[in-house]
Image (cartoon, rainbow, N blue to C red):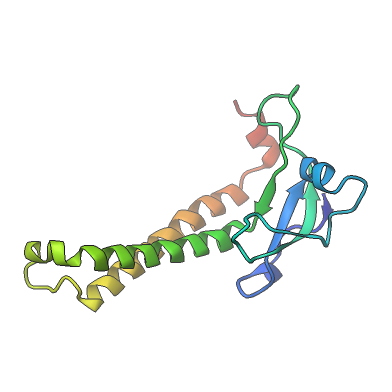
Length: 150
């Protein structure tokens, strides 16, 4: 690896960073050092990510195939953004269909704020567990052992 891995200083509130593979470095920055450069993945996305590291290629299509350019984002940070987006979408969808389901509810309003807050908190907890448990297990696996298993 050239550059640095993700660290605690890449937490929420810090500038967005990315690690790319050698194939991406060769394709987009031939004969240049990509570390410190900035990239953007979407035309409509105003976020620019700073490249902090370059890692080896993973050949997904077989050993004789060329590796594809890849970028790795700090996953927990990405999962947090996806969870927040999911909660916002759920609240918007719940508001849109509330008048249709109002007749099916007993003892609670279709727009009850405590119900929406409770469901949002529950979804956030599930999302945290869905990321934390596999991430925790993955950090305890020896990479060489994992690669040797069929």
